[in-house]
Image (cartoon, rainbow, N blue to C red):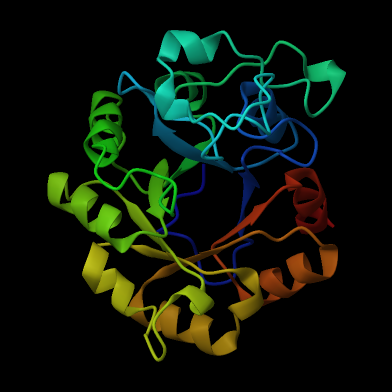
Length: 260
């Protein structure tokens, strides 16, 4: 994997599969991660939260309704890991993926460490517990797997408080500050998130990325990784701007664009 912090000025951006290759396989499953690897992704992005017994699981939504066969608006935190593992998490996308299950963070790291970089997003929005200890749990898993290098892992979140808590737990952990301008206070400078959180990368939505932001980031030595870039014209614009990483549901298409 090409290290993030030592990449030359004009190098192509890294390809990151959003929830894996989620345009072609059920999001946040091992199938989606294997698909991302197969089509040439450098990284995968995925979401984590906790089970009732405090295990770090890979799941985006705050309920199990959309992406499992439970089909009820019940929350993962209401179920133990053993109970969650009994659920099926692939056939909602296509019958071809029947039998997929909710992975744990440990399982993903064990399977893909050294093969893919991993952008781990800690969910934080209304409907998620504010003080359930997930920062410490995620830090413990990464310490156990000896993952501290930014070319291997990033922990990201929209919640500056969660990132600051992670930084306080272990300053070695590479952090990325997710943000959307419409959710920031009026006049707030997103670069201030770096000081607030200890983050080493900014993760803005692609629609707000421009030459000014990139020039400022390069001058400050800050990485810029953008989401979620799914259309070819947008991919090309981000490539031309010189971003460090593009997060996309379609890593195969982005890889093809970069290779032409």
